Length: 202
Length: 258
Image 1 (cartoon, rainbow over the protein chains, first blue to last red):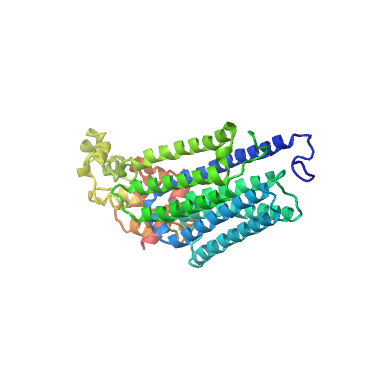
Image 2 (image 1 turned 45 degrees about the vertical axis):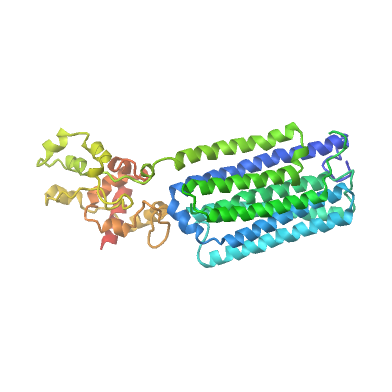
């Protein structure tokens, strides 16, 4: 477990314990992430009912088909990430690398679709400061986008390390913890998608 | 840790099955959002319940949550409990509050205004009923216009006497240019100033306000000093303006009128 270059090399720690602590640390971090986005969800609900007309007007600029497409793309990326962890657990290195790269590809697809949504808005003069709806829209989707970019960085790192033969059935904690982060990015979107694209005007 | 040293293996077909469930639930979410339930909040609640179920599938199967121990589950559950509490109370507050409690209620204020004039022609009437303002606020018959058109709603049409005191009260000693600069900083958050800024509901365009003959400099002076005193429950905040700021802003607003 404690291969050089991991978080654990400085300690004389039991590999199984190290693996469990690594995962537990990530779960704790994810709890703070949920609360970070939770504050924004609360803001969404406050402004949604306070400035309802702006939400009706603002959400009419969103295309639910784009949102649905991106939902499916992220769900598939979560699946490929889960398959990557599974491959690492089975010491199937080629399959691990292939699934990590597929996850990266779907993450990039998400970014491209997001670009097709954001750029026409900017061209129409719709920015984060346009009104309170678009402040919430750009803040929530923008913060989510930042998480996608951070997730892509770590998945890329995992792919590079997998290519060096780092991971196997005795040492896959890194892949699993990266996967936990990526699945959270998916979960956040699972909530953002209906709230912004489907019931924004309700 | 039970029998396995690290982690747990699931059948790879499980992941594919979960992905298919998630796809189906996405379609269900979209379909449910197109249905018009009788109660508007039901659409939001249905969307949230389906999202929560999708999230639980991701946590239990993709994230191997079903194999995690109690300590880990404590960290899964506690942020969710906090979040449900927070959003749940917001729903109670905004969802079930009568609409007229957060849409600005028009309030008659002219009794008070005449009281401050110090003119004697209706002083007995005014001073005889110190609570008249509040009574008017609560009596639907006393309010004017429709509730969304706040700007034009409040002063009852008492005619404006051509008294010298009133002429002095309506003078414009301020600097319109400085007023415009101030408006670009302060008012722009809710009103359009010089074509820029937001236009929030309940914040009427300045041109509309100034077209109303009731909005005299004297009225605006009281209004900008403390909006809530003029119209209890108004959305317009007390901006804590100095007297000179107020004069400058009124001078600027007067230029819109012309």
